[in-house]
Length: 94
Length: 467
Image (cartoon, rainbow over all chains, first blue to last red; front, side, top):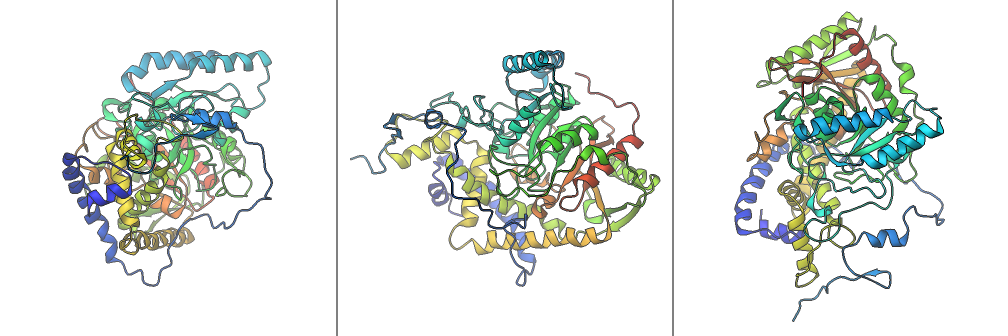
């Protein structure tokens, strides 16, 4: 398991010391879960959810929201400009 | 009003020792109590009854942080104050129950001991050097210590049942889809279930009736009507078929735990039930299945914590990607990071089939084990945990050992079945021991009936923890 690669995918920054610790812990966990390879599941369907319900639909009508636009934007720690949250640029700063 | 006051006073007295409460909403609670008293209408049994809610249930305007730094504004950003109510707290508000505030939990409910909370651990009221269990340790401890009359929790892999067992109160994990998850911060969406804690089964039944039911805002809730769970209490368990699963009595288990649970089976027999041995052959694969599926769903659910719409923020990041990395690395604790990484790995290209898809298939086998067992028996008994509450810090350097604490708690969520946890005695060190009663999907009535019958049969003086 390449911790650095996984951390990048998960948008986490792992320090040098943490890499060693996490590598050890995660290796132990992954080794443990390998017990599943003992089972022959070639004829078994996967279970994604246990409700037995599919496609719960409703009429495509707009309903009033409990939270107002101001309430929702008010939760943001970033500046609000024209009802939008202003973030840093996705591009590298030159 | 007296009830709220007495709970708040109790909190002041005992909470410094056990740390079950992370946000006390006393002023608001007293205000609500005054309003209710003034109106004088007490048409629901829960009207005016004070409770605590786990710090993952959104209450409008009340700081809700999942006990994580990523939703606190301590070191930058804003503490999350939800702009809306969860369906569950809304339903309780509608019947007049009064929320006293937020109880402690493992960070984002990831843990079995309430030790990963950013606010520090909750201590077991029966022995403050030991854990209260987790992740709903705060709720369980608060009920056991009389800080409230009931509490709300969530159970994904035992997080209601295990702390109830460790703290000596009752808790139920209902069938997945019986209660609404709307407004509750998600951990693993195909397993998370909302449920109550209480001091006895009758109270538990009352709260469950008030919160259960279909919710238009949670498409995984079932359309089936909610029974009045209290009305079926008191009926006999004569002729009930009770299963004892051999795979749940393992070597290394605490002998007191095994003793008490077997004594509980004897009690059921004396009440006229038929005890049968059953087998749940895939039990030993439950923890591994759980710890692939859960981190996978976690890695997806944690993606929303990015410092944009709520919570923690930093001011000196280079660009957006760096901002995400900084916010998430500063905000999340080690256990959350571990699970995000395991999940990211298990779902990544090249590993998805070997890990996630494989686990989903084993999930089917675990579900089948129960379906087959419930053709022979009506309910199944087991211990809640192989040992009573362990010492705080016992698993500090061994996350895998902590995962193995969930050994009796993981299979039921994977199969979607309900489980009731109630006290069945004490260990030699005077620590509570929990009994789990499992039932088929939508079998809550049966569980509560059986639990109540057991409670009535074993009702000696119920000891209280000395605080």
